Amino acid sequence: MVCDICQEKVNTIDYKEVKLLRKFVSGQFKVLPSKRNHLCPKHQRQISQAIKNARFMALMPYTRNQTRK
Image (cartoon, rainbow, N blue to C red; front, side):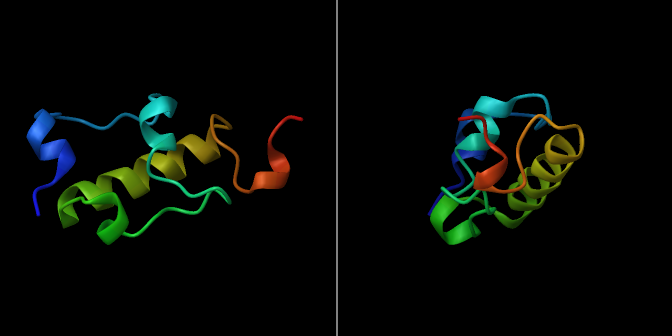
């Protein structure tokens, strides 16, 4: 299994790229495990940290109830 981010040769994962980060969360906005994301441990840690930063900066919701209707 090859990491998707390694294949695309992405150097940094930024918390401002919300469209990219949405691919790595579930419908309840939980961070998906690396088995479902097909990521190596290095990029899984970077994705998790970027999602946490995006949530803190209010770019992504913590739960599904916080989304706009």
